[in-house]
Length: 214
Image 1 (cartoon, one colour):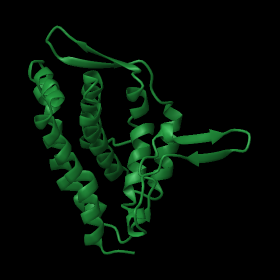
Image 2 (spheres, one colour; image 1 turned 30 degrees about the vertical axis):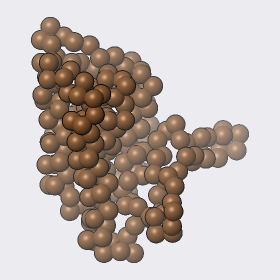
Image 3 (cartoon, one colour; image 1 turned 90 degrees about the vertical axis):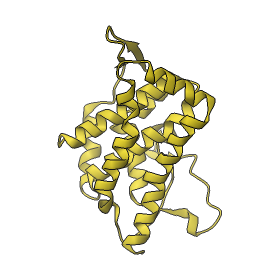
């Protein structure tokens, strides 16, 4: 159990402050400046870069939805590549959890692991991370992302139906956007991935604003 204010402080650390810190890294690191140069010299690069500020405004509007009266023990990174399944015993194994130096640090905001799962299942992070896409430049010098593979629609539907019973799907997807934006400084060795993460963040926010978060 915790107060709503305490849960909001945790949410701010995870979903706002981390994004702000990662955005600053793009200006400070040489590889980040290469990404900025690519974006500034493309037709739609400024729009893509503006997704950081757009997200922070959206998080501020939806922030109250992250006010809960409890925290939970979290895995920290339950993306699909960290979930192993044995079909013989129908057993799941969640690997590579985040470390905890104390009992208190075991706990996190209840939305975080859901956002990580959505990051893989709805946002298709693992497909981007494994380069199952292509970035092209069209005749207007706009950067375009073409996907070669997508998650099965029925899998997405099952996930959304399950989440709706326990969580706010819009809030979860907003948290998911923060994950795509936070990933960018960690993948500066592959600028095409960074562009794909920005485009994915944009598409999710478009869906939310159009009333179709799932």
